[in-house]
Length: 170
Length: 319
Image (cartoon, rainbow over all chains, first blue to last red; front, side, top):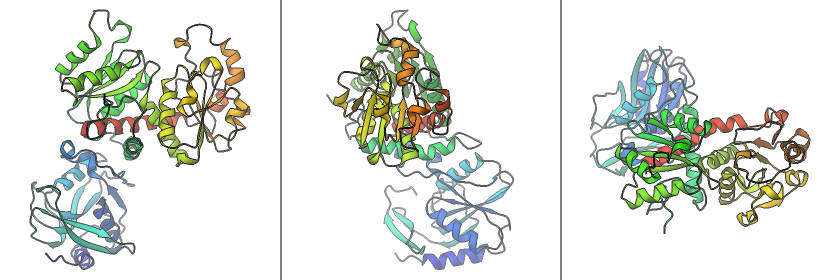
């Protein structure tokens, strides 16, 4: 299948978010694709947006099946979550399980005033009642295909597909 | 017989000793411990990885610190922790070790953290569980006799790596009662597996095992030559409770020759770090000015110990 250009999709996402995001909203990217996007969005969207990063490995519901991933990163949230407007950022929204895990982890840091969700690609296939507030693009993708965001040395983002390790997981 | 701590596919099934443990597994544990360290700095010091699992702390020998750090590690992973301090009365009602274990497995234990004064007790439990088809119940050795204390060895390695990065150009000196020290044995195995340039054991002849050189260690009986040029100094506790017979003239005499003072430390590298597994005997193996000085990383060791134990428990629970 042909995928849209990641940089153009990001530009489209910025356009939909511009003016809709609170001036002091704090951005939290889900490692690793969401972390790159959070950095880019925080710069492109008007306002003062501190950026944090979250690794949801410890909060996933499939730990018993897949085990501990070797390269877990430490979550890094260098600001108060309590009372803040938080924009969670992820690359691809699929089953909704990563976002569920991220919201769980977020609440271990405090009680945010509101949590919004920005994703580059919404590919459908939800297994939980979770929706993106903003999406760069919406695609229909077969369940056994993974969409992967990568970043080259110059910081340019690109989308590609891989065979999913196990159908029904993202 | 295959080492009972490794599964058929070579992954870690139990943690019994660092001896013979492949470098990839040791490095994997150290890497996994890094993000766990940051959880302990949060407001909510808890992640749900082991939610619903039951960890039994099975302590047949007294320990406050080790038991507490295992308990904290398990609780920060959201496990349920049951502490059994069996102490010296373990056999007072006549139950054997393996019967005790079988009863706790019947209560649906998922993991045992075992400390025992007899070398090999955790090994016996793990082999028994593997043999009876219950290898999914994991065993962590929290110190057995003079044999091994692998999580202490790992937290020492984590501490050294944190401050000194690469083991391959380090000189590490382990000072004192190596003979009675399972901490020293575990650390020596870990250091040699990770390719440490030079490992030294310093102590009086009576407190060094006769075959210590066979572990790849340089032996010194004098602190001045032993500490010269060291990057890391690991002081061991003088284990008077394990000593039988006259191994030492007196604690004062020991301090004079082997107690770590600023003066003795001066021959080590200027940025050398000082470690101690605790509990410390101030004025016996270490002077207060060193223990509380700016080169001491004794308290960070304790903090790192929780992250390392979280990593071990998570890896065992998920493999």
